View (cartoon, helix red, strand yellow):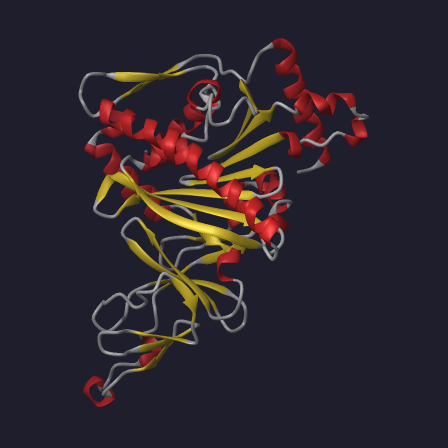
Length: 381
């Protein structure tokens, strides 16, 4: 984060604390229930947003070495993310070109070649078809034209991005915009190692999972016991980088900044900085590590999602003390979000689908929710 931006944010937060305010929009926003949970809406979101827009697939640290791979699922598209022998991260459809069987059935690992368990067609790290068993039976089938389907991808800011369109053009800086792209660059060194990763199926639409991180009004109430006053409730800054955004949660240690000389004041140790990378990825800077959250609709039911969580660190965990430290962070994060936020999201979806309400309201103090809803609507039009 550029120093000028950091100083401006410190000043903005100090003003909010002094006046007992938060970032507020001009008006509340009334949202019809049909724009949240109707079959037509959730299907349109899943089909369009997850087939036409750039998305984060996985952190770079998940495939650090040549041959490292992970298997992911982007809605209905099965993916194989591989670091090839030249060190380039590639994103392929995890589908054998012979009969369409799933190529790699392991969730992660390291390999020199990928061989389909059905008929043993094999592919290299570059996606090229290396062998067809009983080649005489495939006379006229050109192996060079039957490599894995590859999608446009780019490695940037410690993340591997893809565009789920064959033959499309991907420019992550253009997608993020210059200001956000420059800001995210500073976090790259902190995303060098994956301490832990987990994918969990949850019983609500992906939007509600992202909403968890887009307003801080609820901290004082929903998390009154688990976070024990670690953050100021309803005191936050919000800045849009259309279609993305940044929300800053203010820790109770923030007033310490104001006792220091201005040139020594540092924002990050006294806040949690939360980026929504549209449509479905959330980056959270937590003092000394990064969390990446990702919510993706299930391929057979857009009212259910897969919630993915990575905890990333700057250095590799090599001591028992470091292991305990990061495990404690993992346990707290997972307990707060899964046991409190996500429980509420499941209830909200169930209640909205009941037919009892015609709509809900996003307050002036919930700009992240208003902005996110508007961006979804704009990208569906």
